[in-house]
Image (cartoon, rainbow over all chains, first blue to last red; front, top):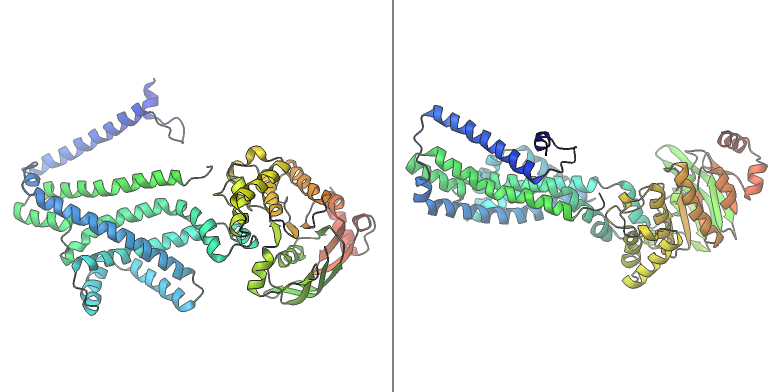
Length: 263
Length: 243
């Protein structure tokens, strides 16, 4: 095998051989390690290594577990909220149509941190929901749901108009049209942007630490206030989030293939 | 098929597309509509397909009055087959499933029977080896033939074909026209809008020439083409047959 084949893809289809995969990934990892090693050495930082992690293992793992639970529930709720909002946007009943429009624009146009404070201290108090975890999940689901709604709406709008017309001409009811024609195609098209949105949702849940939801970031911050070893602690934090987000993008690619048809 | 239309009007905004259109035909199997673009022929077809609602007018097809209330229109659409210019097929379904889905879901036909019907039709249109391919794996001509097979499978009272070859190159056009000619031989009732004058001559029992929202001339193919009366038809035929 020529050296060139190791470093250049044959064409833009990217059918890459296993050896090329290993060589290139390793190369990039080594460059990364060299870069960070250099940067840290310039810092004169006394590394504690893994000792902090081992000492406070319980807190790291507990926070990680809470983040997983919050993410799973927020993810499910945001799909439901997003679908409902998308349906509202498609509704010909104008008050509902405008409610969803304004709601989505407001959520997408304001910082999550404002929404967390507002929902938790104002809406939560008004509705008498004191549980931080329930409020946390609801806030994340609402925030993410607005984005999910736009993704779903975009997916529906991307279906060719002639198909809608064909479905109508063939005598499909409105429900059948969505069930058999639109949704199967939309699911495939929204898979990649949804995966991106869910990865964001997991990372954004770190902001719930400001209302003292005892999740991953909060636990790491607490450990840090004891040990004063930010680099070790935040490295664990970064690693933890990658462990959660990478499988999502991987799974989305798999599902995308499963839903593909003829192309 | 028997069609009676009186006083049919359709506007898009300020633009009048159909202007007091009248039509009375009886005992015609294949009706072909010709005319310049923007003259109203596709609009007439879409109204007959139940996809467009006219401002006013009366339409009776095979002695049944066409009601423009949405529920009646929905039921009416189930009784006819429509083929559009392009992109008729659902891209997420294979050729055979494109045919069976409406049979099973709209017409509540059993899966086994729907499959049998689809297979028979795919054979008839020489598409048997393509039955499990997706639309993106078929040529434009094959896609249109599957769309025609799907419309035929519905066992409809008649077929409406809206310029079914206008998006195809000449080589693919002929295979689609062959399929339509096949239907004519079986005396399947059909209404076809087309720009292919030679084909119109071959397939039509009766021809309508529509321009300016009205039927300016109508009659049997032989007379229409050999002896046009109105200056509009003379000019139209002159242009289309020039090259």
